[in-house]
Amino acid sequence: MLSLAAQTTSRAGFDVNVYNPSANQFFDRHHNIDHIVIFYDKGNLETIEIFFRGKPKPTLGERYTLTFDGDLYLFRKKYGKFPLPNATTAKLTNFQGIGKITDVNVIYNLTTRMQRDSLVHHFNFYTYNGNTEPFLGSADYRPTFKGDILKLTKKLEQDFKNWKPIAITDSMIIITGLVEKDGTIGKLKLIEGKPSVYSNKVLEFMGHEATMWLPRVDGGGKRAWNIRISVRVNKDNSMKVSIL
Figure (tube, helix red, strand yellow):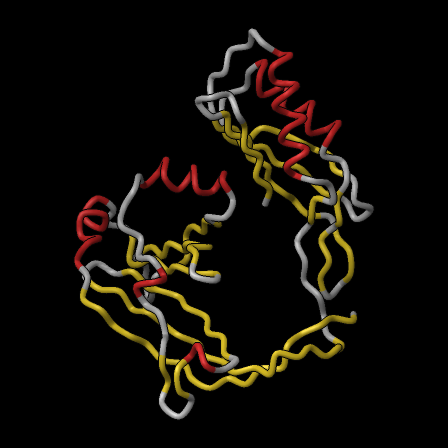
């Protein structure tokens, strides 16, 4: 499959260990958790992986994609709020032999391992020439909604007004569905929140309105894949739709 990529050269990979006991109370409450790995994207928290104690080594037990509103809700529902480190506290500004990071074409990836009394920031540092060139390689894409999610949300808000009076048991619901190889969606069902007239209305709405998808594509071609859609009702009756 034809793709585009920037030419990059790996220049460094190193760890910075920082004493930080801010998460002690969290680990005291959750004795079975060994450590947490945090992934950042352009300085923003993107994904959290939770590793549980095990033998011979800790095992990955849970993953939350925090850019998906549904996962952010589930994470906070289970663990509450605790001091997740901001990527700006671990920013690479200078590298010997390269100079100031802002003066050259460079990129770096940052992951942070949160332990009971320390943070371990791991940097993967690359230089690149800024150009793209075609190359042959396998693609790996999740299903993608082809419509406008903002327009979908506005349409849902308008329909929601017409549904009133209607009781809302849960301000956040999450549904799952299967995007087929031809881009159609089906098998919608509620996975978070109590079944209600409201949740049934949202399921019906998504079945009629969220119908245009690009399917999952990987090295084996197109394939059916599950997606999740979260719907949040805010206090002012505005709504937020998020898709993963």
